[in-house]
Amino acid sequence: MKKPLLFLSIALVIAPDIALAQQQQHQGNQPRPTTRPAPQPPKPQPPRPGGPSVQPPRPQPSRPQPSRPQPSRPQPPRPGTGGPAIQPPRPGTGGPAIQPPRPGRPQPPRPVKPQPPHRPGAGRPPNFRPMPGPVFRYPHGYRYRRWSIGLLLPSLFLSSRYYYDDYVRLGIGAPPYGYRWVRYGPDLLLVRIRTRRVVDVIYGAFY
Image (cartoon, one colour):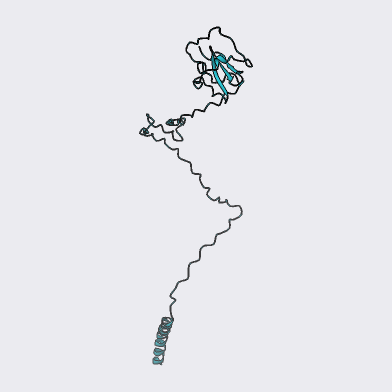
C-alpha cells in the first residue's frame, strides 16, 4: 500500500519537470527572426476641441547691417593732368561726386578758306581790311574825285603804274578775266579794260 503511494507522489513531482523540459526543447528547435520590425512613427493627434491652438513659428526678417564708410586712399596723379586724381565718393558717404579733370585735347588749326573772286557790284567784302599805302600822286590836272559805278575812267589810269595786284592783303579776290583793280587816291576801282567802265568801287581802301 505504501509503495504505490510513493510511486504516485514521485510521478507527480517529476511529471511537471519533464513537461517543462520538453517545452524548452521545442522552443529551442524553432528558428529565431533575424530582423526586427521598423518602428512606426507616432501619428499626430488632432487637437482636442476647446484646447489651445498651436501657431507655427513665424520667420524673423533679417535686418541689413549698416555699411561702415571706408577711408579713401589717395590715388597717384595721372600723366598729363598735373594734379592728383580725385576719385568720386563711394555710395553712403553723402558727398557730391567730383569728376576728375580731363586733359585738354589740342584742336587742329582750321584751314584758311580761299577768297572767291570779287564779283562786280558786290561792294566792300565783309572781311575787308584797309591798309596803309604809298603816297598817291595824281597826274597833272587831276585831283581826288569820288568815282561811282557806271562812269568811264580815263585811259591814262589804265597802265601798270596805277594797277593794284596786291589785292590778297586787302582780303578781296582776284578780278575777273578782262577786269583790273585800279587805285585812285584812297579808293580802289574795278574797271573793265575794254570799255574803261567802273563796275565796282571800294572806298577808303588805303589810309
